[in-house]
Image 1 (cartoon, rainbow, N blue to C red):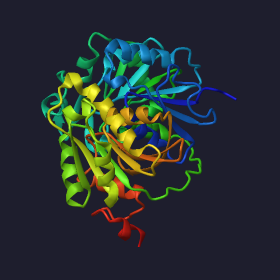
Image 2 (cartoon, rainbow, N blue to C red; image 1 turned 90 degrees about the vertical axis):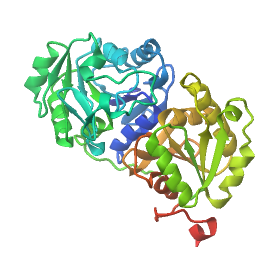
Image 3 (cartoon, helix red, strand yellow; image 1 turned 180 degrees about the horizontal axis):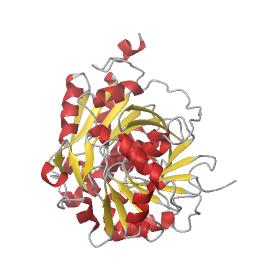
Length: 397
């Protein structure tokens, strides 16, 4: 039995890993939480598609490069590699591309058409606005790149227009990394089709590129098991403006709000019983109050993960986790190493089953409409109505 997957997706955070895995629902797919050797011994060797959260988004560029290098070193040519990147180009993408370029031809297609994130002349646009003018990096310490080429720095690269074919890619790759424009899923399908003729090619993009690869594969039925309705704890660790609006809608719809002061959180003064009490109504939403120094963001995420783990460990509670770092710290605190994606409630909102049979819904911080947290939580609670939350008695009626 081959210990390595035929298809390997390497993500830089957990919500992105789940988002990519959702592209392969209906196939044998599993999500592995980062280990030293991320390609073996993490998930059952029978899984056809392995998606690994390497956790490189929050690492230094040197550590991210080393982690990715360990994951791809020595991979046989039969393994197709997709490197999932952030749809707003955050993280250590330049360092990761240098690693991949040393192992084979690299094709980047960074568009996510479903959220109107497209690339034109090598520039990522969000809702029609170039990334560096969009204000979407307002919580980052760095300045957003003016283009994908600027992000790559000195790395040789060639821009390729939408509707690429294999000859276009071959010509571009002779000079360096191929950076492909895309505005539609059809454009991404063209990239995947053109790259299929290139041995050892490394595909780099968002979950939309993973979905384009998935569309080339025959469907396979996999038993996903049954979800037993459970109370839901929403954990919001992202600073995205859209998430704050979603929290307001969730509270207005009946979720019990719990705000933990950031100083109490990092200093171990947060009381888990406060959160447990809030779950009595069936759904609670946990947020962190107070400004978070970006230098302490990692400590805050770890403390939040420990708090959530102390609340849900040994209890039948479903989790809704927004933001990749938040999701990762929670699963780390719970000792979870494998997730099996079950369904996608909406774009990027993925429900997965853990090894112990519990349920976790993850979603990137910037995704979803105002009712995102409501619909994700209600799915875990076995409720079809996404307009409001129901009490335990209403849900069981």
